[in-house]
Image (cartoon, rainbow, N blue to C red; front, side, top):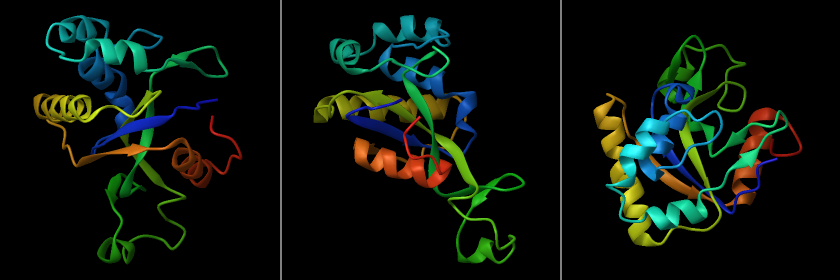
Length: 167
Protein backbone atom coordinates (compact mmCIF):
# COMPACT_ATOMS: atom_id res chain seq x y z
CA UNK A 1 0.00 0.00 0.00
CA UNK A 2 1.37 3.43 -0.91
CA UNK A 3 1.38 5.91 1.96
CA UNK A 4 3.51 8.87 0.94
CA UNK A 5 3.51 12.17 2.78
CA UNK A 6 3.08 13.79 -0.61
CA UNK A 7 3.40 13.16 -4.32
CA UNK A 8 4.88 15.47 -6.90
CA UNK A 9 2.64 14.98 -9.92
CA UNK A 10 3.85 16.06 -13.36
CA UNK A 11 0.90 16.34 -15.74
CA UNK A 12 1.38 15.40 -19.38
CA UNK A 13 -0.73 14.34 -22.35
CA UNK A 14 0.75 10.94 -23.22
CA UNK A 15 0.37 7.47 -21.67
CA UNK A 16 2.61 7.75 -18.60
CA UNK A 17 3.49 4.07 -18.31
CA UNK A 18 5.83 4.61 -21.26
CA UNK A 19 8.03 7.15 -19.50
CA UNK A 20 7.23 7.35 -15.76
CA UNK A 21 10.29 5.55 -14.36
CA UNK A 22 12.63 7.17 -16.87
CA UNK A 23 11.27 10.61 -15.93
CA UNK A 24 11.80 9.94 -12.24
CA UNK A 25 15.39 8.85 -12.92
CA UNK A 26 15.99 12.06 -14.89
CA UNK A 27 14.43 14.28 -12.23
CA UNK A 28 15.86 12.66 -9.08
CA UNK A 29 18.62 10.19 -10.06
CA UNK A 30 16.59 7.50 -8.27
CA UNK A 31 15.28 4.20 -9.67
CA UNK A 32 12.86 1.58 -8.42
CA UNK A 33 12.74 -2.12 -9.21
CA UNK A 34 13.07 -3.15 -11.98
CA UNK A 35 15.82 -0.60 -12.40
CA UNK A 36 14.45 1.10 -15.49
CA UNK A 37 16.30 4.34 -16.06
CA UNK A 38 19.53 3.31 -14.34
CA UNK A 39 21.72 4.92 -17.02
CA UNK A 40 19.60 8.06 -16.94
CA UNK A 41 19.86 8.19 -13.14
CA UNK A 42 23.65 7.87 -13.25
CA UNK A 43 23.90 10.66 -15.83
CA UNK A 44 21.57 12.90 -13.79
CA UNK A 45 23.66 12.67 -10.61
CA UNK A 46 26.21 15.19 -11.85
CA UNK A 47 23.66 17.83 -12.79
CA UNK A 48 21.39 17.74 -9.73
CA UNK A 49 21.89 20.47 -7.14
CA UNK A 50 19.82 18.66 -4.49
CA UNK A 51 20.86 15.03 -4.95
CA UNK A 52 21.11 14.53 -1.17
CA UNK A 53 17.47 15.59 -0.74
CA UNK A 54 16.31 13.13 -3.42
CA UNK A 55 18.34 10.29 -1.91
CA UNK A 56 16.81 10.96 1.51
CA UNK A 57 13.22 11.72 0.51
CA UNK A 58 12.22 9.80 -2.62
CA UNK A 59 10.48 6.71 -1.24
CA UNK A 60 10.62 3.19 -2.54
CA UNK A 61 7.45 1.32 -1.59
CA UNK A 62 6.80 -2.32 -2.26
CA UNK A 63 3.55 -3.37 -3.92
CA UNK A 64 1.68 -6.62 -3.27
CA UNK A 65 3.88 -8.43 -5.78
CA UNK A 66 7.14 -7.39 -4.09
CA UNK A 67 8.10 -4.78 -6.68
CA UNK A 68 9.51 -1.46 -5.46
CA UNK A 69 7.95 1.68 -6.87
CA UNK A 70 9.06 5.29 -6.65
CA UNK A 71 6.52 6.56 -9.17
CA UNK A 72 2.83 6.08 -9.81
CA UNK A 73 0.91 6.53 -13.03
CA UNK A 74 -1.56 9.32 -12.35
CA UNK A 75 -4.81 10.42 -13.99
CA UNK A 76 -4.45 13.72 -15.83
CA UNK A 77 -7.14 16.22 -14.82
CA UNK A 78 -9.67 16.97 -17.53
CA UNK A 79 -8.58 14.05 -19.76
CA UNK A 80 -10.27 10.72 -20.48
CA UNK A 81 -9.16 7.52 -22.16
CA UNK A 82 -11.94 6.37 -24.43
CA UNK A 83 -10.85 5.25 -27.89
CA UNK A 84 -7.69 7.25 -27.35
CA UNK A 85 -6.79 9.97 -24.89
CA UNK A 86 -8.70 13.21 -25.23
CA UNK A 87 -9.85 16.30 -23.41
CA UNK A 88 -13.07 15.99 -21.46
CA UNK A 89 -14.99 19.25 -21.63
CA UNK A 90 -18.38 20.54 -22.70
CA UNK A 91 -17.43 20.38 -26.39
CA UNK A 92 -16.02 16.82 -26.34
CA UNK A 93 -18.64 15.36 -23.95
CA UNK A 94 -21.27 15.73 -26.68
CA UNK A 95 -19.33 13.28 -28.86
CA UNK A 96 -18.80 10.65 -26.16
CA UNK A 97 -21.21 8.02 -24.81
CA UNK A 98 -22.98 9.03 -21.59
CA UNK A 99 -21.12 6.37 -19.55
CA UNK A 100 -17.71 8.00 -20.19
CA UNK A 101 -16.55 10.22 -17.33
CA UNK A 102 -13.34 11.33 -15.68
CA UNK A 103 -13.93 8.71 -12.99
CA UNK A 104 -14.85 5.80 -15.26
CA UNK A 105 -12.25 6.42 -18.00
CA UNK A 106 -9.30 8.34 -16.53
CA UNK A 107 -6.35 9.05 -18.81
CA UNK A 108 -3.19 8.00 -16.98
CA UNK A 109 -0.87 10.46 -18.64
CA UNK A 110 0.81 11.91 -15.54
CA UNK A 111 3.58 10.80 -13.21
CA UNK A 112 3.56 10.99 -9.40
CA UNK A 113 6.92 10.79 -7.65
CA UNK A 114 6.56 9.46 -4.10
CA UNK A 115 8.37 11.59 -1.51
CA UNK A 116 8.20 11.55 2.28
CA UNK A 117 8.09 15.32 2.85
CA UNK A 118 7.24 18.49 1.01
CA UNK A 119 10.24 19.59 -1.04
CA UNK A 120 11.71 22.99 -0.16
CA UNK A 121 10.99 25.66 -2.82
CA UNK A 122 14.47 25.37 -4.38
CA UNK A 123 14.12 21.59 -4.74
CA UNK A 124 10.63 21.95 -6.22
CA UNK A 125 11.96 24.53 -8.68
CA UNK A 126 14.68 22.12 -9.79
CA UNK A 127 12.19 19.25 -10.17
CA UNK A 128 9.83 21.33 -12.29
CA UNK A 129 12.69 22.73 -14.38
CA UNK A 130 13.96 19.20 -15.04
CA UNK A 131 10.44 17.89 -15.76
CA UNK A 132 10.04 20.57 -18.43
CA UNK A 133 13.43 19.67 -19.90
CA UNK A 134 12.59 15.94 -19.88
CA UNK A 135 9.32 16.61 -21.70
CA UNK A 136 10.99 18.89 -24.22
CA UNK A 137 13.72 16.34 -25.00
CA UNK A 138 11.17 13.57 -25.55
CA UNK A 139 8.54 15.57 -27.41
CA UNK A 140 6.08 15.33 -24.50
CA UNK A 141 3.75 18.14 -23.48
CA UNK A 142 4.37 19.43 -19.96
CA UNK A 143 1.05 20.86 -18.79
CA UNK A 144 1.77 21.46 -15.11
CA UNK A 145 2.59 20.00 -11.73
CA UNK A 146 1.03 19.69 -8.29
CA UNK A 147 2.01 18.55 -4.79
CA UNK A 148 -0.63 16.24 -3.33
CA UNK A 149 -1.19 15.19 0.26
CA UNK A 150 -1.87 11.53 1.15
CA UNK A 151 -5.52 12.35 1.95
CA UNK A 152 -6.04 13.75 -1.56
CA UNK A 153 -4.09 10.87 -3.13
CA UNK A 154 -6.27 8.36 -1.32
CA UNK A 155 -9.52 10.11 -2.36
CA UNK A 156 -8.46 10.22 -6.02
CA UNK A 157 -7.35 6.59 -6.09
CA UNK A 158 -10.60 5.51 -4.44
CA UNK A 159 -12.66 7.52 -6.91
CA UNK A 160 -10.78 6.12 -9.91
CA UNK A 161 -10.46 2.48 -8.79
CA UNK A 162 -13.39 2.02 -6.44
CA UNK A 163 -11.04 0.44 -3.89
CA UNK A 164 -11.29 1.38 -0.22
CA UNK A 165 -7.49 1.47 0.16
CA UNK A 166 -4.70 3.03 -1.82
CA UNK A 167 -2.90 0.20 -3.60
